[in-house]
Image 1: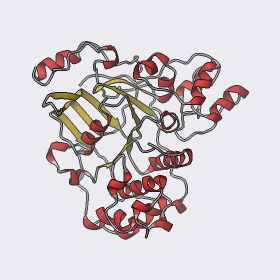
Image 2: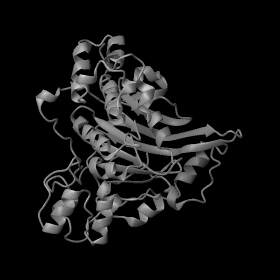
Image 3: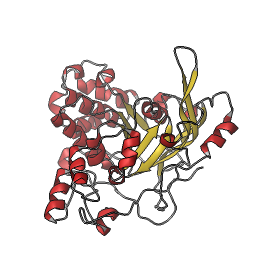
Image 4: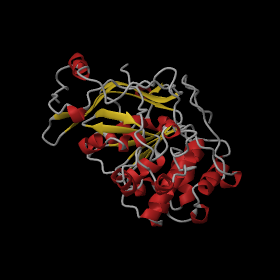
Length: 389
């Protein structure tokens, strides 16, 4: 089945097998010139706890006046805007409590997700992370505002149709296993949608996630790490532009967590953009190139991992605890802080790191490190500018 060509130009990439070599990494940083990325001029909830939450009954105009009170946590640094994959326009979403009250969980959100984005979505429980993922997947439709995936308004398509463009991996992998074997589960979407060459696609994605030897096993009988890789295979067979994961490393041991982190890094040549809701700060440091901090349904900050971990006041307000290597680096006065053990070693020995999974240690692609090597002093923030729509 041919995919509809949306006006945003979101494209469909072939899925290479392991034998084809390493997938090239995507662009990790936007140059600081050109037009700014579209994002939100929103009230940082971490600093606006006294803002009324009774916006459901006050009307849209009242909500907009609340949003205009202050800007999202940012500094003035323009960046080149890449092609958008998903866009949220003034989105509100609510839910009904057991007492029958209506509470807003997403409040006037404006957000643009671009090609090459590897976004870590962080924040406390109830901050709106899972709701945002489901809005981006089309599993929920916003009460107010619009959500577009590859130029398609999610109100105009059923979730099954949108799964070709945006794929959502549930927090609990067992929910995605429906058939007697892993290969059958991976084949469900491409075979039922008449995708040409679907058998080859299934074999390629199983090879990509290193599960070919388990293809005849029931997915529910695999280990936690294998199940997460299996759910990735199911979604990769859909060939989506946007991949959404909810707590992909939750309750994993170190080895399984590393497997998932490496797998996500390898997918940057296949998936146009990835959004991961997580409490795992190691995943944030090692994989993401953009971090969105949510608080009470509002974007409190939108910045890079290095900028996030360089700002203890933001970490404290958002109740985020950095990985041990970052805490050690900060304790030793290393600025900007090292995001990994190799960076720590290089900071202490005076050598520059060459590569990590998210590319932030490569001085050729990291403007912070290029102008200010790890451990050599204070860095200038390169946080993106956000403007209201």
